Structure formats: C-alpha cells, structure tokens
Length: 549
Picture 1 (cartoon, one colour):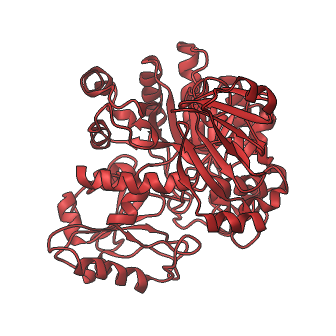
Picture 2 (cartoon, rainbow, N blue to C red):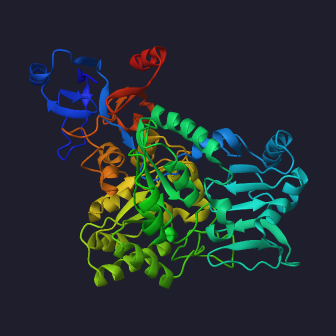
Picture 3 (cartoon, rainbow, N blue to C red):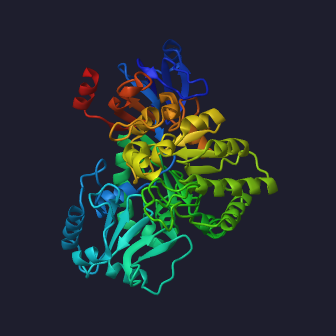
C-alpha cells in the first residue's frame, strides 16, 4: 500500500496539544508523520498518493466507547422494530401489535417472533403490551417484546412456556416476573437481567449465519458514520464463540472491543481464552462487565431519592440488581485477576455501590491506573465525582438521553432540578475525572456527530435546554469519542489521535465542527478511512450538496 499525503484542509489531531498541522503523511496502514505540507512533500516517496481535502476537516475516526455491536444489524434484518418517535414511527399499541402480526404471518409456526425498541414512555397508551395482547397476536409462536432499554420485556404464553416460567416460579435476585395483584397470574412482564436470562442477551435467537449477516449490516452502518472501532459491551459465551469463529487471517472490516460478562470469570480466563483465544487480531478482549441497576425509562435505575413521579409506589427509588456484598465480591475477583471493570450504573445509588466496592478493593489491593469505569453515570453527584477522582475511576456518559428522553426526565423521572445535571460531563471535567460519551446502540443509534451535539448543546427533542452549566466544548465531545475513548480501554498508544506510529483511521467531515457549535448537526461524514484505505465515501452528489451549504 503506497504512502498518502493528506493536505489542504483543517486537521484536528486530538493529540495532547490539540494541534492542527497542515498535512498528514501515512505509509501503509500507519501514520508516518504530521507537520508542514512543504516538509512532508520533501520527504514523501515519489510514488506517494495525494489526498486533497478541498477545505474539509480530517480527524481521527470515531471510537464507540460503549455499545452492543452488532445488535443494530440484528434489528434491521431479523426483528420487528417497534420504536416510537423520535427514533421510529410506532405511536400506539395497535401499530405495534399489527407489526408483530405481520411478522407472525411470515414466520413458520412454532418459531420465535421478537419485537424490539418498544418504549412504554413514548407510546400513546404509556404502558408495555400484555401477555393477553401478545397471545391474541399468536399462541402458536413464542413472542417476546423487549423494551428499548433492554432491561425488561413482555412474553406471550408460548414464550413463557419456552422460558420455563409459570405462576409458581419465584422471582430471582435482581429481577421479577409481573403478576396480577389479585390472582397472582403472570402478566407476561419479565423485568431485570436475571429474570430475562438468555432472552435479555443481544444475541438471543441468533445462530452463526445470522450473526455474520447482522455483523456485516452493522459494520456498514458504523463506517457510514465514521466509526472504525466498535464495542460489544455484554459478550455472552455464545457471542464470544461467534466472534471467535472468524479465521485469524480474515479482516472483518471493522475493529471490535469485546467486554465479556463478568460472571464468566474466572473460568473464561482459565479455560476458553487459553484454547479458543487469542483469535482474530481485529477482535480484542477488554474489560469485564458488571451491573448494579436498571434503566430510567422503566424507573429501575437505582436512585438515592425517589423518582419525581414514581410509577411503582412499592419501588419509588428504582431497582437494585445486586447487593453490596455481591458487588464487593465481584469487583474483588476481577480486580485481583488484573482485569479492568466496566459497570453499568444509571442511578446515583447504583453508582454508590460500585464506587464503594472499588474503594474497598483498592485499600486491600492497591493498583495504579486500573481505569475501572462507570457506564452511563447519568445521575452522578458532585461528591461522587470527587471520590471517583481520588480513586482513579473514569466514566462513560450517555448524553443521547438528553435528546431522546430529556423531556420525560424533566417531567417524570428526575424532575426539573436533577434533570438539569443528567450526564454531568462538565462537572466531571471540573473534578478531573476523564470521561467518554456513548450511544449504547441499539438503545439509541450510533451517531457520533449527533451525540456530540447532545453533550454540547444539551437540548431535548422539544428544544428544552437541560443544564447550561453542564455543557461541554465541541473539542471535549470529539476527544470523548476519539483519544479519550481509546485511553479508557488502554488503546491510546494505538489509535484515537493523528500521531506518528498510530493506525491510519480517519474521518473526513464536511465542515470544521469546532466552528459554530449550534450547527453541529449540520456536519456530515464525507469519508471514512480505515487502515489507510477508504471504506466509505459519500456520493458525489452528497458531497456537492455539502459544499454549497
């Protein structure tokens, strides 16, 4: 692969100085040097190619700090999309049930039908479907409708039978089965990861053939939006086996960070990794994943003060998925194995459980630069951020919530005061806590530019501003999806910035995103470059439209 000179545009390196050189010279799949165009021209090989940026902006390709690749591909190809505005167009229960009926008609009797991205807070009726409604769709097909958050769902009678759940089945720790308060009969609602079991895994009903079909579809989507390093943040044993099936010498077209389920350890490291891993070099085993609580949309995120308008008066603070004792044990086990931990903590009380566990294990077994990470951290308080800074904890925020559910946070979930500081990235900066931002695909689609807009401008879908003092700069939002995202999983020496020796993964943008933050949504990805080669390019017509704006 020949050398390539990139010049005649704005170059945002995301290096420590946030430098903006005139040109970048690559050799093969690596960055050779950056600097003045004349200097690079003087040293570039005679057969080097030239890439005229024509005034556009070149920056490192985006990194997904937290998501569930390739789940978006599974949704597109194999599942029934029941998303409501602003994600989709399913506005009332009848539409959702009709879409499931359509899928039933196209599905052989006895085979599963799965609906996804259903949001009880967005649909007209303001509730999940019932077991009876799904039985009316079909009793001959197991039907499973999972919530947009991935933290609960509703099953019809055939699906409950397949799952082995009946009215006598006890609720597991950290989960529950919905029951009629008068008769005790199952309503079909299954809440919490422990209760959902394999039905809560993103690879549910996915065989090897479907996995790779979904993988290709998801890869193409991510590359379109400038993402060359993705993440699967809940890798079950089945999911790990699917990834491991790719021959080591085959390039899948995108690089993936895999986060195995924490409960798989220590057996995973003792057995599977030694025999079936390392595998393909484009798939990296990263942190191990834990959970403390649920989701705000279901009011199962665990808070220290009650929800603004509690939906369940028996659980006004939300739902805890684990005990402090169990979290202490899980964190100690993984930490003492030398592993990094990413822990899902939506509510501040959920985060407290993890912070306490990390503090205890560091007192007993000190370790420098562990980079244990809180995932979501949407309700983190200032006192918690101060503790995190002292403990060396990092966080990946979910500011897409501001756009998609910000109005409901304000009116229902958190109320006016707490919603003003949801995903408090500016506070994290003030306390010196390094952070990233994510979309958690498929909860919200992976759209790095729009995600930056959510963190920078903090506007809900109705236009309500949530937290003027929690706004961050465009540069911070871009670093949170490039060099900071690489750093968070110990990859900062390989990718995330435009510096000599790093992988030549770039994105070409239609405009300099640092100018006019309010116009961030107008910024478009014109080209994605991976390992020095173009893997996505907007059509000439699309590029012409960009240059006229």
